[in-house]
Image 1: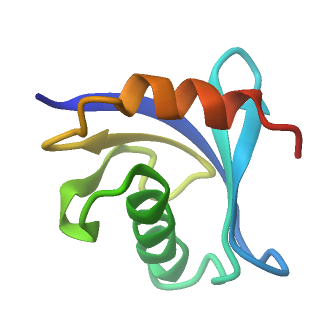
Image 2: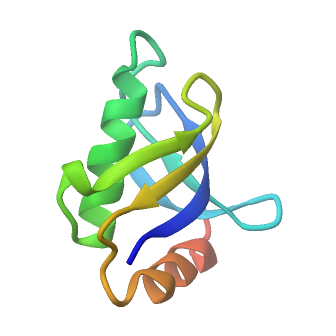
Length: 93
């Protein structure tokens, strides 16, 4: 089963961090990597893989490759992906 969700990326952060809500229901993800040559996107995939307990290869960008607002897909997704996402969205940044 695939699971898609919106993400707001903050590249160049002091440290990697996942949690919080941007707008209606986009997950905030801060990554230390700069937004240069796809480095932030690669770090985003790694950080989300760890947060959802999947392999980095299971995380792909569906939309927003060059912007801060992205759509991410977990495939295959863990059975508790929706619960994990809701918990991360509820965290304060």
